[in-house]
Length: 469
Image 1 (cartoon, one colour):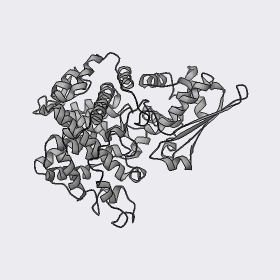
Image 2 (tube, rainbow, N blue to C red):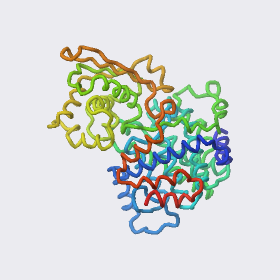
Image 3 (cartoon, one colour):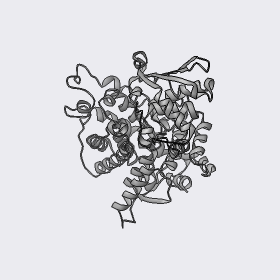
Image 4 (cartoon, rainbow, N blue to C red):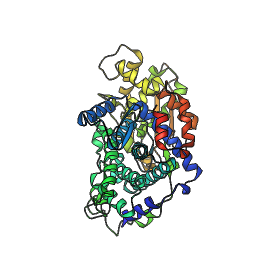
């Protein structure tokens, strides 16, 4: 059975198998996660989720197992901590992901791992084992189900993320193979997340992450106590693949084999994750990078732009909201992402919030740059390009073409980006990740981060105690 092979890998993986490269990537990913989450806890969805948990559990001030809410001097139960931290990790649209798995993984892996490690005072080495297992399982399953799963309307971070959280929790709870299979079986029947939430401008997108953490941990604890889950939840006739991936008639032994997929189990692909620079959906980043290249030539003469054409792959082209009503919709809007870049340049969380304060989402603004952004959006066309679409998902290409008016050069400028900044082929330096952390958390004592260099030598309870203050 498929899940039995996955369970065997989860159970048997040891810290000693990890390469130096893998450990270093995990440390970088943890640094990135912590900085994003520490800042993200102040965002409205995190605020609401925190208050809702307090409302539901009012009076329950003592828990046998406690875990920290990142960015707050507060501890709560494991499930609630992982739920809130997952939401905070995803709310800024800055968390890591994997191009071909089409999922954000760190926002599910780290909240689960930290909650259990802190509560049980587990070691840094145990933390690394579980985190590596989480990335491995997430990448494997994400690549297995996509692009079909995503094209059917499912948000992989929520669906596959539930399995990932369950794998991490099962590893840390030291479950045997049978219990791990039950964990994953229970995860499969709770896996959820619809892309309508992503593109509908709601907070449902970040709820997917919180629930993936919550349901994964719950599944592992239930399985440890004898609760059973289906061992065929993935490949069964009414399982995950048949109902949530393949269309009628596509799924069958003659057309699909797990053998080639299972050959990859245990071949850790952690280095393949990407880190994000801009607070927009990852599908917009190649267009942003391309617009930044063109801005070098155009400078502040953006008012002389006659029109802009963005040619990209189909999934990215579908992010064509020309009239975002709120911050959630804005983070998914390709026209606005490119227009903001051409006018402002590289944008960060504070810059985006400031533009909203200046009336970016309103019908009227007195700020010239805001009006220039809106004007550019109205001059923009987005095209799904067949040749670029063939390159996806191995690449995420975007070609931006700008035509200037007759009073300024009368030229046409264009450029193309195949892989956005932050992927391992076009990587961040560690110094850039630290700069990202400082930009998000300017008053944080950056010296605390040195403990991440030697996590394997500490209890994770001590690590969180230092980092969270």
